Image 1 (cartoon, rainbow, N blue to C red):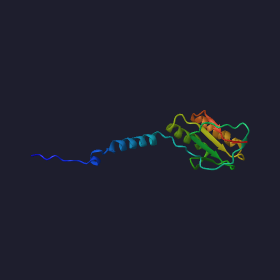
Image 2 (cartoon, rainbow, N blue to C red):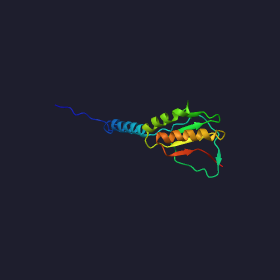
Image 3 (cartoon, one colour):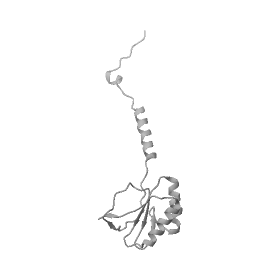
Length: 134
């Protein structure tokens, strides 16, 4: 004679959470992989003020120039002649990259023009110069 097992109502109504956790982890991995991270230039500069300054979409590549004319990319000092190589490397990572130059208001514009020339030589035409709204 076979015995029938009786289950209580709490035992019968369990929900298996494993598939939901799998989906959550897959979504987490998807969002981590597809997120583009903002790379900062690495230094704080005293940007010039402009009355016609407007907000632009965020750039992918930030280049900072301090008052002494020292160029910074990704929180490290870079020689002006090496800006092109660094921009080309970053451009390989994200082909639709835009450049934001954050030059100190005391920086000589000749250095800013040299940096812009290096960026253009690397193949990027979308260059913005950062300014504060007046």
